[in-house]
Length: 223
Image (cartoon, rainbow, N blue to C red; front, side):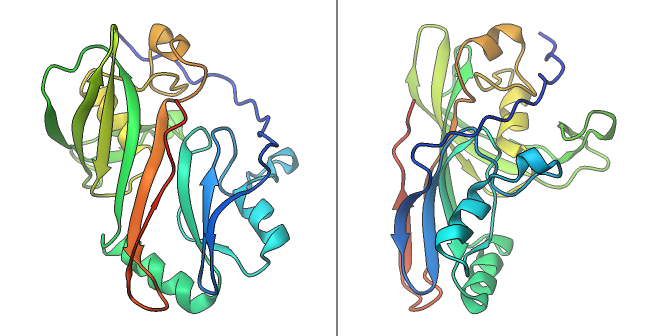
C-alpha cells in the first residue's frame, strides 16, 4: 500500500505529568517525554510549550542534547552544565551511546531479527518527511528483533546504530511494516490502528560525564 499524505499538524501537548523526572544530579537531567510533546519549540508561538521549556522552568541550566519526535515517548537526557552537555553530545556523535526502542508495526514480521542498512535523505517537496535515497542519503542502520507477534501486528525492539531524522519510521516502512499510528508514513489502516504513534524510546545508556561510569536509564513502554 502507498503511504498516505501527512495528517494536519494538531498540537495539544499533554499536561499531566507536566515534567516527569527520572534522575537529576549536578551534570545530567533524565526525563520521560510523553507522546504528543515537542522536544524543542516549534516556530509558531503556539508551539512554544515543549520538553526543553518545561525543563528550563525548574532547571534553568538544563540544555537539550538530543530529541525525540513529537509523537515518540521515552527517555531523554539533558546536560546541566556546558561540560556535561559537550561530553554527552560527543558520545552521541561518536555512537558511544546505546538506545533501544519498542515499536508496534503493521503486519506479521516473519523473521525473528534482522538489520536495515539503507541511507536516508530529506524528501524536500514533502518535508519534514524523509525517504530512502541511495544517491544522496546519509548512512543509516537499524537492528531489530521480534518481541511478540499479535493478530495483525508485530511488536519489535529496535536498536538504531545511527540517529537520522525519522530513521526508525522510514526503516520500518522499507520493510513493508509501517509503525502503527504514524501520521507521516503509515497507510490509512495502519494509522487508524492505534491512538498514537506506537514508538517508544525504552532505554538509553551512556557514560556519566562526571564520573565516567556507565548509566542505563529505562522507561517502561506505555502501550
